Length: 491
Length: 95
Image 1 (cartoon, chains in turn purple, yellow):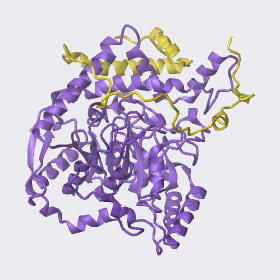
Image 2: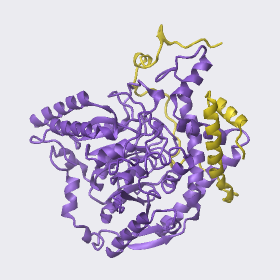
Image 3: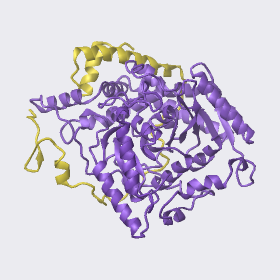
């Protein structure tokens, strides 16, 4: 990714990004454009560069912030009516870390309200259009983030992934999208959806950029009790010396240069690089998955074989129950997390109430989208007395079996390669009125969140109609760094 | 499991929603379909399986109950509410 220097200033990079954002306004990517704030920050970075001062690893790099990250720049809406007018005084830890390295937020990116959806059609501000075909969905819930990167408006974008919300829109738009191991990046200052599943991640154009963003944002945060110690930047034999990057004031980053200095064809045969075993899941090779996606998977397997890697066939029969378990656990946690929105302390408040109970009811009824209401009600159903054991407890037990199945699979292979979703980007309006059809789009992505394992969506060509195809590389917990490194083999 | 109007009204009250008749009809249909889908878990044998509620591998460590850092002060937080009086949030009558 291109950082600012004396010739190409941060102001130039930011102005270009803002111009592109306006040029593509009809895609409905942004809920807020940060013109004034971004240009001010760019000027500060340019002054530092002019004075010869050290600048960060992301100096002047424009990025899009999914609009469920809190920061004082622009209202944090989560694309939901009920959060209207919320100018948060709090800054998310991830935003703090990115901006400390000089990254500049040029806009807040559209999403399905509260990240409930797989198409960005559930946004209060209307759908974001697909980068390759304006009649199709962007995917979701991080649709705005994916399209902002795919249309080259920004170098990277932030996302959240509870059941596929980074990986699926990445695959629908032909960019990289990474959901790390649960707990790798702090969730502090991000609107909670389902707390045992929510992960912070990114959209980029290259694995090198993904690695850089991970190395900047991973690590324990005293403000998020579920963050892991920084395993990402430790105990890795690879190219991991960030101090030199930090000292490099400008120009193309070292991580990106590493690619050209280390030809991929030599990796598999070099003594220092392990010969990984790659698993493919037999249960997914059927008519449920679009034939062009199955072919793309076969092509990548052939590529890996030609590089000397071994392909292992896996049987994972419990995975087909992951979606059902997910659509019990996730709404249960959603119902709990979204009970806080009552119109009292912040956001939208209904004006049609005469008493406090009425204020709660009217605010929630007017402020939530249809899909928010569905999930809250399903959540309260599976948690309610009489149904808890049959649904919520059953799903929590299924989750154990899914974790066991992944553990067993990773005894036989190092990584697993699967489709991200059963289909390429579908038409706008095609599934929006059929919740179960929409949920089925998450068939192959949700099990990773249930198990807490990392997954990287990788661009893998296009369909005959020119729609991007994405595959996901899955690894065991804390294999994130190796997984991103290995993904270069699939290019 | 059959979802009828009564179930929908019960769930709406648990969720603090007042629903229009139109919403009740569409939610009855949607919830029926969703519950039919998630009920396929019945096929899965979970005898003697322990439930998993979180995938965070760390154990709880107690710390002193001290505020390390405050990101927002009272003034900033009160500024977010619709109505405020004497440093307090104003709401319609409670009883």
